[in-house]
Image (tube, rainbow, N blue to C red; front, top):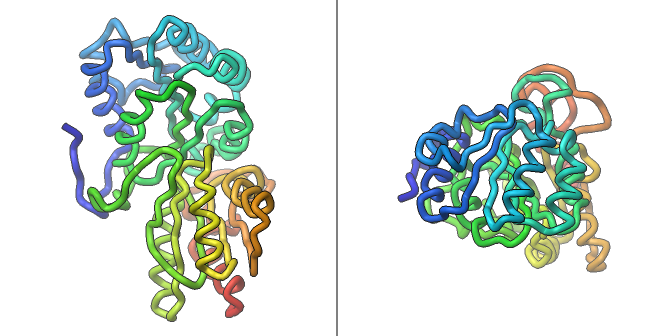
Length: 320
């Protein structure tokens, strides 16, 4: 049975991945787990099903290629690694070997955004733009570690590829109370209701968005926080409803380059649907190589930290 944790508790998303995959391996005898030398959290699966575990070493392109071959043979491969390298070094293999034939390969990994203090080469900051551009790819970005298990369980019945983006995955806050929200790939979550402005976000910045909403509530400002954890296919109906119900005032916050990620996806829906906006602001990583620092420090430095988010919402509300 899936393990439950207390709201607000810190939990390792990597542990959830390992536990869930070992659980799924029992009910799915065609589940394979592969890694490019990033398998420390996959020990439980490896020990239970060594014949279905493959560590190819530091070779992301090979890992994706082997996964595609296994999928052709009727298996469900999960590739687990670091997203800066899976999303870029293996992009051609993901596009041609996995997406083109629409194979059920799941790519899950860490270091999405400016997390881990690894420097610019070890941050996945363009990954969502790349993955959303690929035909047949479903793209998710998860902030609550308990959601990872549910997404993996749902993915077992998916016929095409899936991308799951996480932060470092060692110490993540449990954002939602157990059973508080339905978690469904392709549907967003209204993490906090509000009437004045909608703050769309995903992944590592969901917790920050909720903290911002709490602060502004003390000033009588009602901020709706929406966790659009599936960027593709995006929940268009939820976006339309939120734009309408919060007076066309929208802020998008994300730990990704400001153009090409969620803000661009939301802007596409707004343009395609002919929605009327009162104000729109996007907060994300500017066109810089971010350098070293912890995640909160880098968000503040590059203009999308807590303070900058509060200021953006005040501008959108005309009170900044």
